[in-house]
Image (cartoon, rainbow, N blue to C red; front, side, top):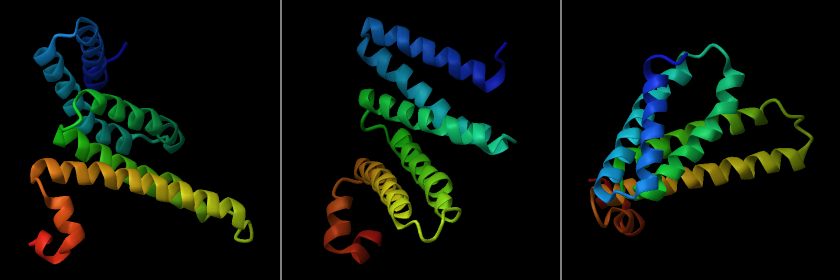
Length: 153
């Protein structure tokens, strides 16, 4: 039987699925944001406390795709954009880039494939971060490209 945060998250996901099926605009959006908040603030602790890193490694991609699925419904929701950015960054670093150290240093083809995948994940993360920044303050992304020092001030 599920308990605690897992049970709450499971119930929230079921509630969102039911609301999505009925298409209740504002209620649906609120429910999705509630699930997003639960997942984006509570899931990190579940992963960091787990004593089975392989289980975490296998579970994270599903979580990433869940975040992206929620963003389809609430594409401008800053807490979810920020969490998606952070989780893609962490996954790319901890589970893709870190694997490069264990590869045969003469296997350039495999190393290049891992580096390319890590880069794509980091760029994906950056995209979510930039969207979050833009939602918080319109024009930030353009300012970062034109005059980064001014934008950061």
